[in-house]
Each structure stands twice: as C-alpha cells, then as structure tokens.
Image (cartoon, rainbow, N blue to C red; front, side):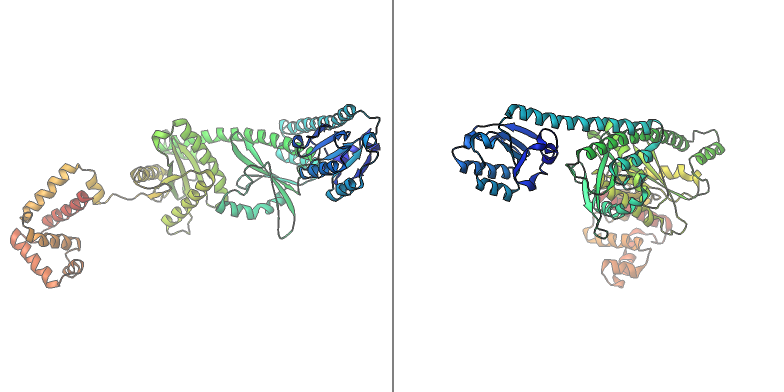
Length: 538
C-alpha cells in the first residue's frame, strides 16, 4: 500500500504531513513501533515507523540522523508525536526530510501508539482482503469462460477489459494462439532474434518489460508455464508496475487459467499424436490388410500417395547407460513438442511421428529443389542448432534416398534407420548421415578379419614378393597401377617416378608372375587384396 492511500483513509485523513510531501507515493509493507535508541538496525525497506521520539528528545541531532538513516534504508515514512516531547520538530529535521523526500507525519498527542498501529494494519489488511476477493472473483470469471467453452479469446477479451491493456497470447516460439493478432507484429523481431540467440526473457523475473525503438511503445511479456515447461507467452500492451497489485493479481489469475486450458489442449494433442503414431507404426510394419487400406488410412492423416518424400530418423545423443526409458521418452516428448512448434516457422511441409525411441520426420520434397541432400542437410542442421540452444540437447539423424511416393516410405525408413545406426556411434553429436549403397570396402567389413587376412597373405604369396624387401616397390607399383585403372601415366604421377620406371616395374611383375596384368581374374584379386590391406591397416 502507498502512503497516500493510507492517509486517505479515516482516521488518518486528518493528520498533518509535516515534511517530505513528495514522498507520499512510498510503498508500505510493514508497520513498526519503537522508542529504543538502537532502532536503526531493525528497520527494513518500506517500513513505516511509529514513535513518540522519546529516545531523541534531548538530542535533536539524533532525530536528524534517524531521518537520514531511514531515508537511506528506503523506509516509507516516520509517524511521530511531536507535541509529547518536542513541541514542534526542529527546522533542520524538516529541511532534511524535504530534501530527501522522506515523509514525516504528526500524530495527535491524544492518540495511543498501539491503537494507531492497529488501525494502520486494519487499513492494510482490508485492502489486501479486497485484492484477494477481487482475485477470486476474477479467477471464477476466467474459469467460467473456459468451462463454458468460450475459449481463450473470450478470456483475453475480459482481461483487456479488466486491466485496460490489449493482450495477445502466443507459443514460446511466437506462433499465435489467441488475443489481439495486431500485437503479433511487435514480437516479429524477437522471433528471428530468439531463433539465433535463444530466449530474451529474464530467467528469474515474473515478467519482462521492453520498449520498441521505432514506435516508442512499452510492452510487458509474461511466461505461461504448464507442468515443468514454458508453454506460452502473454504479451500485454503498456507497462505493468510492481506496485499495481490489483492488476498483477488479475493477470496472475489469467495466467493460471490459461495454463489449465493449455494443459487440456495438450492432452487432446497427445491423444491425436498417439493415434497418428499407431497408424504410422502399422504402416511401416505393413500391418494393414492391403495397400488400398494403407493408402486410405494415410489419406485420413493428410499423407498424399503421389508425393515425393524424404524420411529422416533421429535419436537423442545420450549414453544409453545414463538414460532410463522414462527419461528418454520424456526428452523425446519435449523435442517432439519443440519441433512441432519450430516447423511452423521454417516454411517446409513436414510430418512428425515417433516410433519407440526414434523421432521420424517426413519432408515433402519441393519440386524446384534439385539437390535434395543439401536441402535436407540444411533443414536438419537448422533444427539441430535451435534444439541445442533452446533445449540444451542434441539429436543425430539418418536420412533416406528420395522416396518417389508414399508406398516407398517403408524402404525410406529402413534406409534412414540403417544410416543412423551405422554412423551414429562413430560420429559426434548433432550429426546427419545419408544412406548410400554399400561399396566394396563396406561389404568387406562384413567378413571376419581372420578370413580377410588369410586372403591377403595368399595373394601376396602368389606374387612371390612378400619376402623380398628390394621388390616392395614392385608391389606398390602394381597396386597403384590397378587403382589408376591401368593408366601408366597416372601411376607414374601418383608414385612420383618417371613413366619408363613404371613400365619397367610392370614388365618385371609380369616376368615374376608369369601372367598378364590384363587378366581379369588376376586384376580383380589384386584390387580386392589392395582394399583388404587398407582395411586391415585401418
């Protein structure tokens, strides 16, 4: 309560404000009555002190010191019985109080200090009670709107009427939810800034105030929390001050009801999401009785048949031994929610599903995009960057080839899953891996190392060069020659030797082997031995 509000109530409206008239807007949070000389250490900011001044009656300088110290501690005011021991306040004390804008109020001699304090507390309690009653009525009003199905727009319209401020509700990623949509333009710069730098809200404050430079307008932003996450943002046009208790209580009740409504909507979304995931899991597992049924079910979820898709499978980058199944699913839900909101800002048609511990994204491949690899990598890396900044978590993805229609998504999911599984453990966090057909080296990795070593040794023994150190250059030349597609000039270039030297070494190999180097079976054996050598060395 402000001092001027207290002085407007009976019986305090007849009291004389002796000094510090400019401080009547000081806030009062506590009433203290004391006449002890060591009162100063017990005073706190916004304390109102009621006293007879007995402890300073013989030392006017101590009264001046008391006023100065109370002003430094941001106390609210000094109520003093001047007629009891002073007659009137010293002129120095009045001058100092005026300079410090510290109010001094004269109490009549007939008033009891105890009764004065009680009356002050009654005024403050009556005001607090009125504020709480108003908050309860406001909560009932807001709740009735939601329970009757009027929704968030009706609630925000009432909030505007009660507070006198236009309001707008959006997601924590600045997607509109309800309220005055013209205010959405105010948050447009923050939408881009937040995607690059993270949240600009004060982490420990109940709300954040800011002003626009171009229009020089003030706004206040309140976070809306549901369970353990920040679900939405309430934008209010104009400044909201900490001293506006009734207005803050009204906004607080609105935030509580909005939170409950968002929880209800989230429960509906969770149910819809579960149905979508069940359909997609059955589709991937080919659990429908026919392709016609699968296509019909997909149509219910707006998945057209004749559409090119790119399938990306993602998993959270976390050591499996440190994550329980519950923790993983909880984190996956948070990421799903984040991606769901973030995709609205990226202008890329995309469907979200989950299967077990895997998050699946189906991207509609734009017709004008020729390089789908670069397009998909850029899209996923943006998501990963925003996810790392906002959620302090990372996710790696495997990506399929381009699926020419809906029916090829099954194969696309297998490709994305295999690409992720093959490369996830050997790569760092936030990696993106594209599926590719296995080359010779990858096929060789599937064979036991013992068999590979035996094949290589057998091939080298056939060359009769393994125990001749001086002939090692012949073996190297032969391998490079085969890898250079039997081009002598390219072989000489890679070995940094003259062309004639390469010709001499190859003729020497043919002489030792007793076989033409152009023999296809021999060429294949040498090439495989070369790949095996590099694989074993790695």
